[in-house]
Amino acid sequence: MRALASVVAIAPGTAGFACYDPTLAERLRLSREEAARLIAWAGARGRSAPRREPMWAAALTGTLAFAAAYMPLLFAYTALNGHPGPTETAARKMTWTAPHAWSVLINPEHGLFAWTPLALVAIAGLLLLWRRGAGPAAPTGDRLDTRDAQRVAALALLMLAVQAYTSGSVESWTVAGAFGQRRFVAITPLFVLGLAALSTYARSGWPRRALVTVVVLCVWWNLGLMAQFGLNRMDRQKLTLGANARATFLELPLEAPAIAWRYLTDRGSLYKLPRE
Image 1 (cartoon, rainbow, N blue to C red):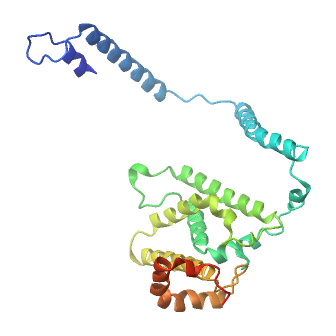
Image 2: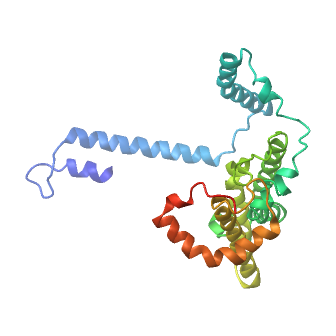
C-alpha cells in the first residue's frame, strides 16, 4: 500500500510517473496507517489473557444451537407422521441397551474388524496417542502439546464408542446388502488420525517395516473382499474367513490381470453374475 501511494504521488514530467492522483495517494497513506493501528491492537489483544466464558453460558449456547439444528427434523416428522417423532416402524428398530454393539465390531456378518481389519490397527494408533501423546518423529513446528494430543485421541475413541453403541442399538445392525459395516464410513477421518499417530512412532527399522506390512495386508484383504463381493464369489451377508482368505491371498492375485482386463473391455459381463 505504501508503494502504491508513492507511485500515484509522482507528478507528471517526473521520473517514474505513471498515474498522478494525489487524493488517492493520501487515502492510501491513511488506510495504511489505520491498518497498522488495527494490527497492533489485535496483536496486543491476542497477547492478553483470553476471556473465559462461564460454563453455563457455553452449555446454554450449545443447547440452543442443538435445538435450532434439530427443529427442521421435528417439523418434517410432524408433517409426515402427524407427531414430532419417527414412524412406529422406525421406532421399533431401536433398542437402547445396544445388544448388538459387539456384533457390529467383530461378527462375520458385516462386523467392522472382520471386514475392515485396518480399522483395528487405526484404533491401536488412537490408543497409543491417548497414552503417549504425539510421536517423537512428528515435525517440531506441527507437534501438539502432549495433553492436547491425548485429549484429541480420547475424544476420537469416545466418538468411535458412541458410533458402535448407536449402530449396535439398531435391529438392522448388519446393514444387509452393504459391503462391510457401512455405518462407520462417516468416521473414516478418525481412523486416518490413528494411522497417522502410528506412523509418527514407527519411522524406521523393524517397527516401520512391520507397520507397512500390516497395512498392506489389511488393504489387500479389503481389495480381495471387494473383488469377491463384486464377482459374487462369496456370501454377501457374512464372511467365511478361511474361504475368503484363500481366495484373497492365493486365488485372486493370479486372476487379477484377467479380471482387470475384463473390467476395462467387457464391463457388462461382470453384472448379475451367478453365485459361484
